[in-house]
Length: 134
Image (tube, rainbow, N blue to C red; front, side, top):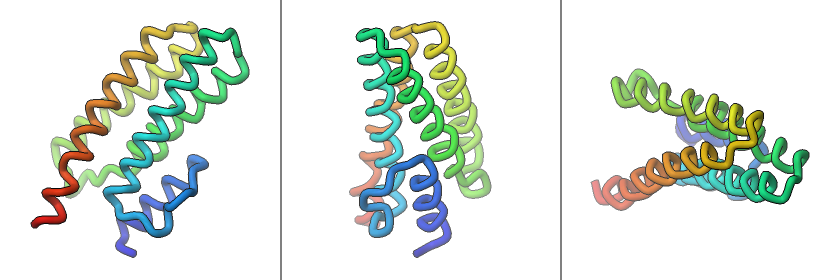
């Protein structure tokens, strides 16, 4: 397993998701992180609407950890240059906004973060076929 793949697997496992990690490509690991964060944000919104404070808090916490300890921590600043720096700032923003949305019970902010992550996930997913063809 390459250094990135090994790091990606550790980052993914550190945020509590283990299914398929040991056999996944680095690209697939990042997709799993996006999917996990998105699922947690959607669960937080559902819990918010259902007045389930404990469920909301758990989902918010998990989403923020995936964004910070998974996606943000997996950035390679040396190879990624300016793009990695921009993603780092965006992930930091998303993490802060997610936590604040939990405090403020603000579903609109959760929707904003879902929209941002959906766009990044789609962009990341679209590069897989190109990477395999190269």
